[in-house]
Image (cartoon, rainbow, N blue to C red; front, side, top):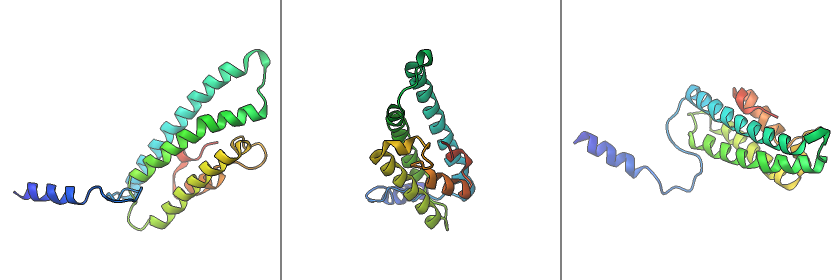
Amino acid sequence: MGVVVAGLLLLAGCGGGDEETATVSITKAQFLERANAICAKSDDAINIQFEEFSRKHFKGGHVPSSARQARAGQEIVLPVMEAQLKKLKALGVPPGEEEKLERLFDAYEEGIRRGAADPMLMLGTIGEYAFTNAYEIAGAYGLPRCVTG
């Protein structure tokens, strides 16, 4: 009977909310471990896609224009970062870490917006990169696998 009641209470607490961030209970150590794993998979996906882009576009010493490389950055990185952010939010927020993670999530959203608006910000060669702020926050928070670029 206790299991049924607990199950019903659990179901009653699920769904119906408009928040994107999960409200599951997770410790900071668990969050860091899982988030770093998510970011590592994202990094691997980006690297695989850029290797394919390089095989296609850097043949015989040909170097694609900066504009083409920037568009590739948009086409490859932005969808992966959007998926990564969704997965990070789904982990939940450790108690007491709400403000720090809100800053991190906001910085990733800002990077996605900036990268979509200006493809040259995807190159990082002009001294500015769309995700610089997000990477700085991620690194300071303890997410070294979420710092790429």
